[in-house]
Image (tube, rainbow, N blue to C red; front, top):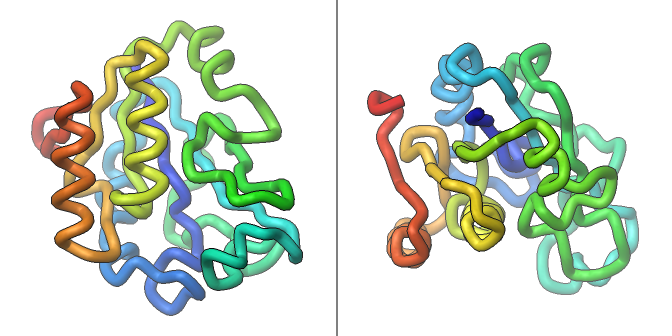
Length: 177
């Protein structure tokens, strides 16, 4: 089976947010169009405590229960089966969705016979890349949907894409699904 995973499509990562991806809002309509193409749709959210060493490295963002931590308001959330929370402890974690603390993503995927994982969300060169690499290392066939992700700096996105492709991750166009 195949599953769609929406990585960190949260207000604080979208334009106007505390750690915004400049083109982050543009992925929402693409992701909404993808939802019906997958039997299983999952999402992740950064869900940081108010005080965490993570904020020594990054501006304060996606504090649990805050407006910034909520999923983008235009995302059709009714199609999402499960949300995985990450970055919930007082440490610099939560990049990969496989670091979720409210459930075991790998176990959930295997329990639902998922073999192919399609990734969308924010930001390409951080949490999307970390999740994609973890997924392929755990034996899943991984696809990152080009139009469904956005990054912060173009040169860093290009490096991330090359790194992902070198590890066997497929960077594909929306039209090929």
